[in-house]
Image (cartoon, rainbow, N blue to C red; front, side, top):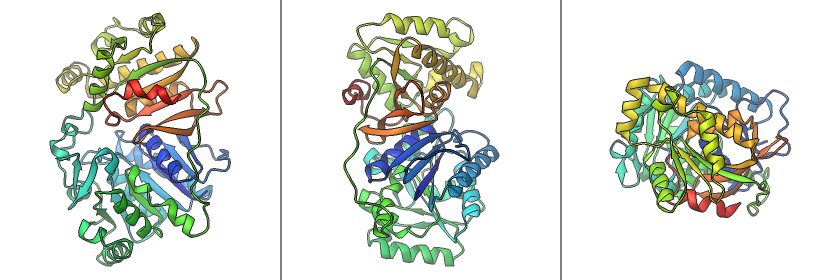
Length: 420
């Protein structure tokens, strides 16, 4: 075991695991903190998926530290703290608070923070985060129901969350290559900085940053930051040559799409699928709360669709989300949908459904937990950051595509099935 990660949500963990697998590492994703005697097999990389993005900061710190200790006890040489490429957080955390705690746990003078993921349009320039051509504060992330992001200045955002001194390594340095980046890291440490935001606008930038970070015990960022890390182990003679991507032995059976995300990308995917003729059932948190929509009614509807892959979704525009949150409470509205979709998935397995495409990090967590999926084999990539996976250790295996709400092309729900 060489490189391990603690991820703050399930879909982000899958995204990172895909990146490591694509870079030639035997990768296993574990759902939740693994037991002390967990068998990782011959994995060279392990990604632990937590559900810590939006819980209280103290709880996120405790979970992340426990996961980190399990991984280092199993032999991990380097740890990644993985968070969203849109830096989803609040002024209280959890990115800064968890990074600070892991930094203290693992030691070392400096760590870095880089959420850039150019393949999905996330870039960092002069310390500011862009989503496509827009600053983060102008993007749909400003309307996120749990972690609205209204400040694109990552140095300022992160400094609000941590007692570590936050610095910046700009693209002027990054484009000069790994030696210059490494020198900038040493200078930052000499200035007393504990964590630096690092600009990146291309994959080549990320590879150079990864090479410069070879000696860091802790690295933080989006999945893109992992692009350059496996090669460090390869240069050290600890990792074999990068091979071809493995195929996926997906179980045969019925399929369903469950979408709980209200992101702009998922709303577009729902719209395109419906226009293409996908049978769809929309969920309303108010109907769930009132008992008008139940697990039984949703399962019955899904089972009634025999000539297509059905779509069950709660994706709504920001104004509808606000109305539901005002009536039910900010967290309660989402929890009702997540719980119902988790129960629906569980019930559907007894009816022969074994292929699940799930949209939304919180929804994916609810579904995977209810299906008692403890580990995943990473398969082929559908879109940047979204692979098909197959459950490990479950008597009846399941094929799962766990999509971050913001990821995937507009026709994602239609194309994903071609790979299984």
